[in-house]
Length: 355
Ligand SMILES: [Zn+2]
Image (cartoon, rainbow, N blue to C red; front, side):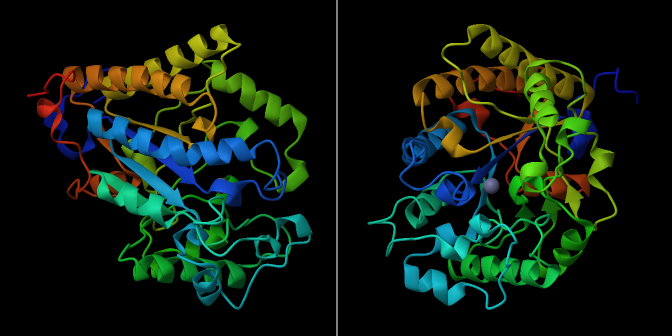
């Protein structure tokens, strides 16, 4: 069947689907360039308030998401964090990247930027939500001074601490999308089945640190609001050479800009168009962002996301478009069940039933 033809629910496991992943990291995602007392602190604390609201919205629309969580955030205390920290650690040439040098408190109670077990528990209480992995210590695979041995040790720590909470990690998002074949090769033996590959286009060719040059950043910015490259993922693309499912990212959901209504309108129409195309042609559209992107202008960001989820609901009704996590996509790609597939739309107010 060509992609110009419409696929319907008769296509079974490979119908079009929306995948959402969130890189859940709090300060561990920005510690190298934003001190804990920088102005961005407000966004990081705002992320903590935004997460339950995001979960409410996902629950209302029956939407699944993968929360790729930094392993440190699982720790109940500094002692537990250190107990699970690997002996073999990266020694990045850029010392600002050393996460083990960060000053942290005793626990979530006195340090809400570096610990988040209560939020992880809240995510797990909600339907269709997957806890994924964003490495143990926000590991940078392309920075010099890392090394594959330290990467493996880092992931082993993440797996062990998650298991202590009865969470089995199977989906991984690489920090700053720094992906190497060497790193991918160690993941299957540690229980992983899926990762989020980088977005397509020259502007997304990731370089370590400062080598992310201005023209790439400008290219990314323009791309987020333009309409040049196909953002949709064919099911066949999930199988690459890595023995994992590559649930490639389609688009980063940029934060809402209150002073830029035209850009917001472009962004909305682009994402809506991608979802409708994915639904009509039986492909995947994978939207990702960080909870701290909703940490300021939270209400505006949530309102915009609600509008996007209404487009999702429209596509679900019309084409049988689905919402699946990264784990659900990996499973469906191989003909498996959809453990996190949405199935209760008919019970929800304002979201008409598919069947
Ligand atoms: Zn990150």
